[in-house]
Image (cartoon, rainbow, N blue to C red):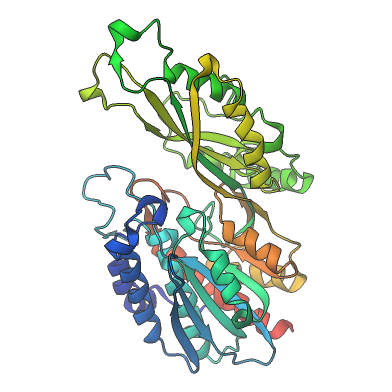
Length: 466
């Protein structure tokens, strides 16, 4: 059924997509002055204007706004097939920060095309989603392929944990109507040779931990040996949470039993693709990865809890570091949680571990909590599984692949609670070297076209399944 070509995508999407890629529309977590800067508004207006130019028989484009919250773009496309159900197609327009210096010739907000790949921050995570969703519907109508009522929902706070989305879901409850199918275009792919369907996502829990001992820094010759080091105290607190030798998370509330079906799926993926997780990582020569096998590494990325220290505060850069015993150290802790662990329960278990019986009675503050529970897909209906395989066969020449993802999309957990009977398709373009959240983020254009054509097949099957 594929009806969209790379030339179509290049003509109809790429000019506006690259304009979007140049906009510094950082998520509010990374731009506290996002209102004053206006980049998120600039991005949503750009996408709205592009949506209004689509050739669709009966549709509406609206930017919804709630005071003190990021906007959402809502594009409602009337059904061309009988039935009362709604399919929601989800994406987001906010971006991660650049992270650091990009490779030579590349920059976060200066899109560059090299062959069939385009490099820029946010272009794959998740700027392409608006274009993919609406081009799929436009192609369906141009080729007389019936579709149900569809609502394309593009939010602007996903990279901050979607704190604004619940308010919009409340506001849009009546407008969304009878949601029966949810297509999320913000997930990953293990390869670029097929449609990958995400079966689970880990949750996320971030917190800033600040350990303080002094009102101001003191000469290390005078204070060291008397005043305890905040870095040493921080290390001791972290050892309560994570085994420093193995990296295993020691808090029972952050762990869970991995379902046997997930173990079997990981074994099948490892048998077909080998050590696919290790191959995609730019590991330095000689570094030993965690996990004893390809299968275990798949599970470690999708079902194991982990801790990453993603930021340090109170520590001078090496070139300006003096012989000073610093008054405080702040570490930004980023936990990934198994899909079936409740993030609020995990948070409540961490608080006493980090604040009770603190070594040397140092002061500890926990700030900037950001939490989101994980998600596991409900059973896939027979019609949908058939459609997914057909979509992947038609667009890529291979049946669909099914795997968990290590990242988080809090939106899916929210929707799962609101619509427990809905059918979910979480997929996306974030394959090898796509570098979401890292330097040199990249969109593989053939993959974007393949995902778009897969959406056409799935929406067509949904329209005839009822």
